[in-house]
Image 1 (cartoon, rainbow, N blue to C red):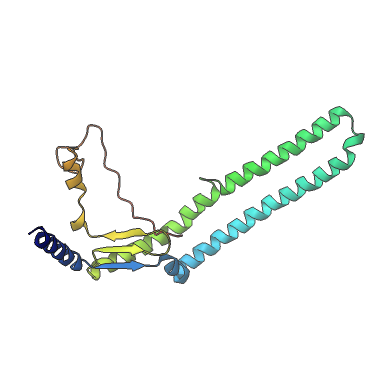
Image 2: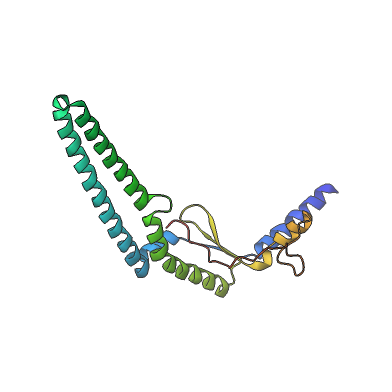
Length: 194
């Protein structure tokens, strides 16, 4: 008896999954072939080269001044040595600060990537969503890096079901919004990889 019930459940769920249409995209390939993305990446690469050259110049200057100091260190009075070492330390700190400003977590590179690449990524995302809807896909995944869902048909959204099971009031149901809660503006998902 239980074997028949188990077989029936397996068959019904397999039939349910067979009706869903799933596709994938390779956003890395798209970004390599899309002229706007290639142009945007070229701009970013030029900025990175400029910033790296600026940092390398400062490092070379620090290295030269450090070498000069090492040659003169033994003949310098104590006060002059302290001043020279402080000057070298300040130069090193300036290099570290500039590197963080340019390439740090929210640095210039991050800001420029956001400004230059975001319009291109939004265009790609819109094309993925439009293609998914036209092709009647239920899910579209990006295979270029970490598996990232690029599109999902809303009819498979079970968020409210889970919230109901957890007895959590949902901000999306009328009259159940939490006091002071605001709805964030929807933002397009970012293509993975680049």
